[in-house]
Amino acid sequence: MKTISFTTSQFVTIDYELASPFYRAVAAFLDLIFLCIYFLLASYLIDQNLFNLDWNSRMNRGSFLTAFFIRLPWLLYSPVIEYLTNGRSLGKLIMGIRVVKSNGETAGLREYFTRWIFRIVDIWVGGFGFLALLVSGTTEKRQRIGDIMADTVVIKVKDTQLYGLKDVLSIKSSDTHIPTYPNVIRFSDEDMLLIKNTILRVQRYPNQANKDFAVELANETARLIGLAETPRKRMEFLKTVLQDYVVLTR
Image (cartoon, rainbow, N blue to C red):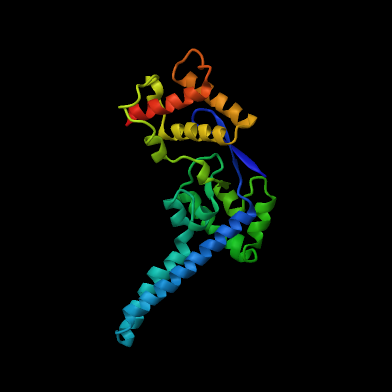
């Protein structure tokens, strides 16, 4: 299992598993299935729209509808949907993988289009995906050529083990919690998600690596909010920080 380490804005390192070539291949195959289903539906609707038209009108309108509803989606599906969903096509969403920059930041439109342009080499020129599988299976960060050129990686994200922002916002209301650390307002929602996911990870998988990470995170959090020392019950401290943040910022 290959992993990659990212450093958060609070200088805490967190590891993610890199997506294997198999996961990426299955995600690409699922995307192809979804596209085929879409094309069948689009073709049917276009035919229905053109059914009562004369030959010239059918040709003119048919060319436009085909270009707009079939050719453009075929060409732009990958970069556009990954941009709109922060690195996850439908296939990647099902497989629990995501495209990010190699430093852990969310990729931008430039990175997605760079990856898309080099699909021509990775997939079509390289033997219907054989080159992509070969390169991603042998490079250190499991990158295909498009990833290398765009400086991106594909990581595994297990949604069942991660809290989302809506979970953070529903922790406690100001009616049931009195803030202890007012300086937590300096943090961001992303920082709180990291804390929440760390708590969950320790609860589900209480191994030494996860405990050490939680301790490091608690120490750094205490330093940033101006505490002279970290409270002894670090997990309770992190939970309090999370609750304080929700109450003070919402």
